[in-house]
Length: 290
Image 1 (cartoon, rainbow, N blue to C red):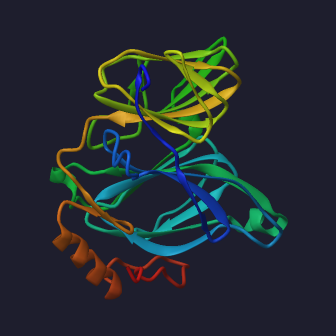
Image 2: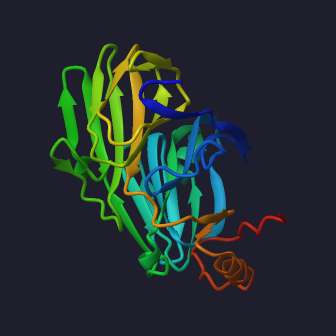
């Protein structure tokens, strides 16, 4: 059907407490790309004065969450005692491992006057050998991430290596994550060394091997093939990929594991309050009824 694109995923849209999200993975057409098993694009959302993002404490196991903003700010708090504001271009990498709880909220200063919020939330499944690793949190400001600039192309290396530049973000498996901004006519060349790759068109319109694709599409690329992505108008792309998963994963709510039994244990742990407490937080997200 397409020359260089294996599958096209049209994200399904949902409203999460006033925040519009577009879920590209998991989907019927693609469960994962490399170690990435979840991708939500969100916003742009306008919050009025006194309003903002309010995601109360909730748990994770078996994965790392990666928050990356295009606009706005949010405050991360977790059961390790971490309090970290994330701003556009920064990376919040939270390794859940055997279990962590966290919350995500609009900072009080922005909440008072109203604000906007947009970005991408992804989950990276941990390799089997690290599924039960101790939870941890790492923050990397935008200035610490390599930026590759050309006449009509700017690429920030969020995770992994590209064009000889490597991100300082530590991972448990070979992972690629790029934020690419292209002027009209700009071309992003993706070499073939990553076995699994996909790009999410945040904005603009692109052409790949003569085929055109609009914004809000996840384009899964054929493996082991050099692919040139041309912007037909100013465009922003998120490129994900890397080493494939070392076996299938089960995903239920915020839990990722190789077995149903491990997910059932995580459910019991959350009900019993065994994920720890988050300083200066009240309330929590209960387990879904189904």
